[in-house]
Length: 167
Image 1 (spheres, one colour):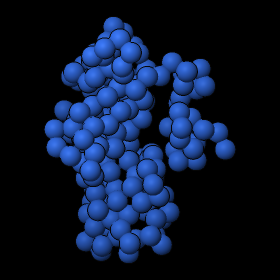
Image 2 (spheres, one colour; image 1 turned 90 degrees about the vertical axis):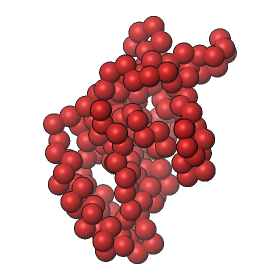
Image 3 (tube, helix red, strand yellow; image 1 turned 120 degrees about the horizontal axis):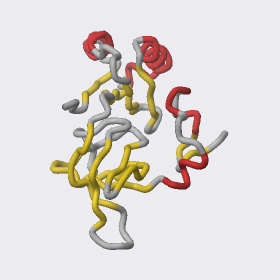
Image 4 (cartoon, one colour; image 1 turned 60 degrees about the vertical axis):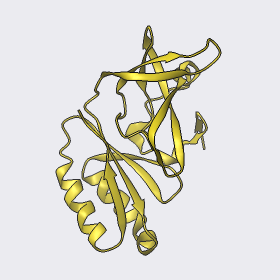
């Protein structure tokens, strides 16, 4: 199984495999400080491709940062020459949307069904730990059908979910 930047490629749905081996060698980590701790984390680093002076296009879904999405371009500046760049601001929104889903204990047996339905509703996903998934919605995909589906699952005690900021 190929590994891309430390991630098992099986954790990505097929549309997400846009990172080629050549691209992977050019990626850097952009660090984000979190204003509030999220799942015990005070910061997160996301893979990104340099696209201009201090500008980086995000190449993985955020897990704890709630203000950016897949393929967004951010301005980030290293504090020191030998450190990863630190997030300063969003330069350009990609139009993508991110929803995190948490498979609850009661939903473990339905996990693949849930993920397959999310794909049918227009998302791709990354797997964090077999219980937490980042769903990505490309520009133009209506997330409202997925939100209705996830609300139904939440009412059944199957999943919990949250959506990242968009604008």
